[in-house]
Image 1 (tube, chains in turn blue, orange):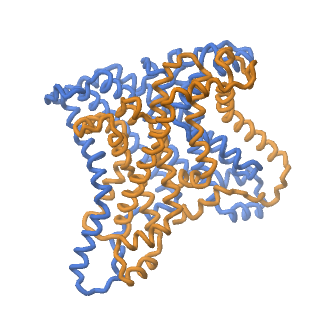
Image 2: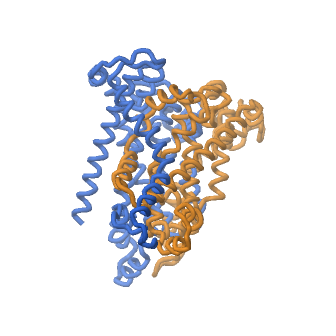
Image 3: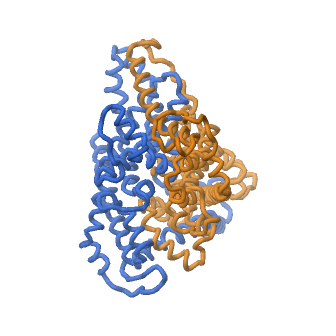
Length: 317
Length: 296
């Protein structure tokens, strides 16, 4: 994964036209430009229509009192933002989202790494391990929500059956404040860990075998090899996985909404759900747009901090 | 393209034992046990779901952790779910809209990526940067204005409203550009000297060389589209236009506590992708490893 960085930059001096004869160079370049824009056009039109324009329009909406059905739409200045900043429901939703991000990211990175290290030992049954860990990731949120809502069912769910089998008190997993978000985290870890697992597995298999051989010749045992070769080599991909995971966890919505049956409580409502509720339940598009921009700001801040950390670490090496 | 070139082994990994390591050392046995326990924990929810879907409702509601209900294996739950009729329509909707999204996404991304990779035009770096920077925009931020836009276009509750906003995937452009960057330019030059135009070169030289990456990316886009929930949930209200995830969500409350039926439905919805996975394991693994984007 580290090898890709060198090719990221656009090389302005790339000589794509070197094969063409130099006759009529200006005309050729003009044609080249036209052809380039023709290749770009389908994507750029869609990009402008479905990304750039909605972003600008969303920013505008956030300063209006637009409702769902087209009424309102008057410019209200910073009123929405002022309201958002004193809206305890929004802050609660941000708190829930950040808390979920913290408690989900750590196991999602750790489990993935352990799984990949174990699978990479070359033990028999490779396809079965990959299938077990990765398959949940293929399922739609609807499916995993149904399975886990049933597992966490207080009366007939498997989770409580397991608890009572080992002599513990049953829990109301999804009905207890604070515990509900932890239950959602458990389901999420099960659902998405396979993605990180594959990224780790790919990184592990890119470590040259020769490094291990050299270490073995020098008398390094398995643990020594793990600590001195494998773990350091996994650091760059761990950085990438952390960034992707945190950004993904901040977007929590589907599984929370569905596992809790669309009923939001102040200890479990994620920020995306609050955007949805403000817009499509409360019919306040303008206000929902302003909350989504607060959320966007949160993502940008987190992203910038992460980039800073990652770059500093790179600079040190 | 070192990353993609190194990846295909993953699908068929058979790492030889490292030097000085026998197949039955205590450490390996411990590792095997740890792996087996984790795999079991990850598989159990599936096993329970399938087992429950094959019970009668009475058995399913008993909450006992048996694999087979007291009345043996029953397909009653599947019969009920399938006889509702809509499941087939939703599965078909999911399938063809995901296929169209995949085709459009890969087609327009490949053309753009090729231009970014190989062609000279003013503003190239800036435009490319803008596209890549858009990766950080959470789709949720766009939902409100996109819905508004779809209202204006009269596309709420239509397939186009469902499909079009899903075809812009900046990470795909990024991945394909990196792949095209690594294709040796000499191959194209030869064709161009022979008088082939850009489109011709792209179609008959570059695309055939890119089959592996196009396959990996396509499967990945397809899975994403198939499983997408939030946008289809918002844009589609008509029961007959719904995709499988959205359709199933609407009938859960209708089933109430009929857990065998809910699980039968979950199993039905999971089956197509599990079959796809078994067939395309290598490409999927490679696709995820190469793309590294699209975490949920």
